[in-house]
Length: 158
Image (cartoon, rainbow, N blue to C red; front, side):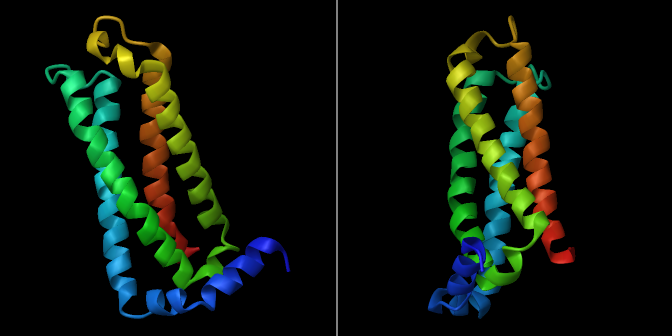
């Protein structure tokens, strides 16, 4: 047995996984969904604005408002997602859909970090001199996070 399968089996046999499979499962699901909605909703609006939509809304205050909401969503989604994984770790570790979802989450986080490092200080004049690469990262972010949500739903059906 390879290490991911062994780790998943150990996690699946833990008391935490037993708790997650019980009445907590429904609440973990609700929490994960709320975290995802907060993350993708906030980032989605910001990404659309960065791509040029809604220019009547000033970008810097919008980013200052939405970024903490997106981070709050991520902070909720990660532990609730881990709980959902623990509840069914043995089968999820073998799921290609689940692995793609995790890969896209990592890509989405890297994309966000790259954008923040490269363009965060340039938001003030974004509409006068938008970065083509920055807009491409924003569009990619939108696609990535929507794909994460879609794959998350598809896990149950694959």
